[in-house]
Length: 169
View 1 (cartoon, rainbow, N blue to C red):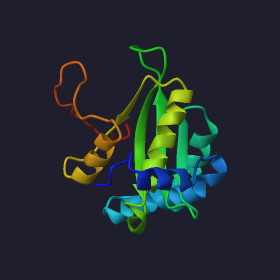
View 2: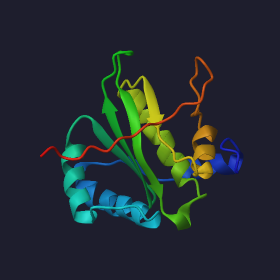
View 3: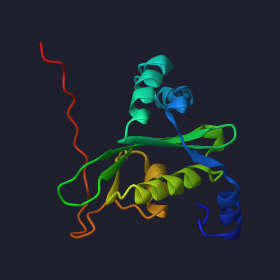
View 4: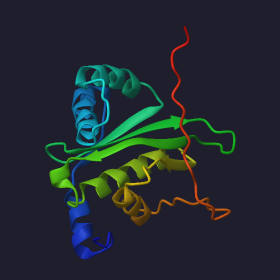
């Protein structure tokens, strides 16, 4: 793994175009998220449905996205929620994706750094990320950028639990 503070990595960081997305970018983000799920054989509602949802979410105050590359080849999608334990919201990195042929180029790191800065600017108290147990590469990536899979106070491993809710009849 490249050292994120090496001269080469710093040069890449300074040259990698990243920007906060607007609702006008919904179609582009939807295409990336669809590619992400398709790459990992995960169900997707399709680009049109995702784009419509993203247009609504990105127009509001609790969702933002960061795009990277020129042309755009990576995205981070973040939602913010209030939290009783802090004055500021907690950010959840819902999705992060970089096209396979661009991985290792520094785009993901640039996107993540920009996402962290936006979270700081929005007064977020913390950022949460859920990673599949089998995705050791993602875990290394996030750890390299200061994230941890353990509770900072107790040192215990953190776990993510999930339950899908079927519509009520």
